[in-house]
Image 1 (tube, rainbow, N blue to C red):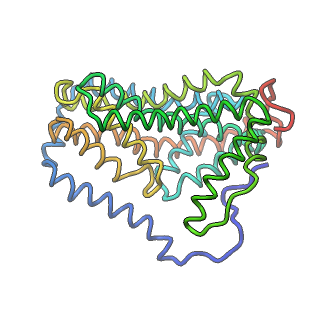
Image 2: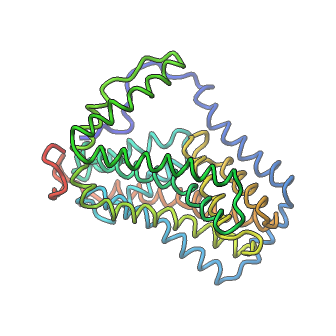
Image 3: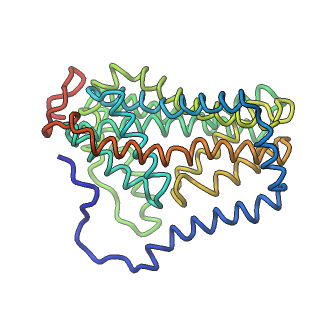
Length: 364
């Protein structure tokens, strides 16, 4: 049974000033974006006027796209967790998203909360680990691959430059290498162990540069990963790929609609240029400096889209509307789903009593 997220390993508590430093940094950065960066970039009054100029139909379309975007990640969780219902996936993903968007280091808390929720529904820690590993792996594949695809599309639609071609080539090579490594891991236990041993050498070499001890046991780790996930991935890799792509592209759709409804025309910023900015801004969320990349993502998107040719006020309005719908709105929704989880006792099961399928090995 999963350990409750409130349980911690005994040890010295960090000083209060250190615990407050990260949240304070997030607030200072957000204030700097609103009260320093935006006024340097455009008039706040012009941004608000642009938002108010949206028609009722445009607002309704944006809200429908947002609801669809919020629903899409549930498909990923249902695909990677056989036996999980769509309603349970909705409660889990919305609650953990709210935590990740609110707390500094919220991703770690959200991870523990996922284990706790799944455990209350009868899923073992192993089954939850398989779900998180496979969905996280596919999510990172798309995060890393989307900039490559975006640059390639931009190079085909506009006169290519040497820099764009080099970036696309290097990214494509890296993505291809990752896909080949995954195929070798799933191919057999022997090839999985070989991948683990092969990766140990360069990682240990990099760790030596920073005076850290080498890694060991990666052959056992990759073999264990293969044993736990091979049935699921062989049967559902195409559905997992489709669900992950739909989730990311649905998020991009909200951004594109927000830009168009704010007055950023296709002549100013084409959809391929918007996709490039979106893809690289998404990479910033992989480094948890602030919850959900707040501050960094806004600056990156506004700067990138303005550099592509968008009118400053319209770009700022579109990006801020996008962030309100996809970053701020999930927070109160997550509070509601957390209450649903606490009160929905009919979903509770005994430990390891969740329905099993042929895609769940006996050892998981």
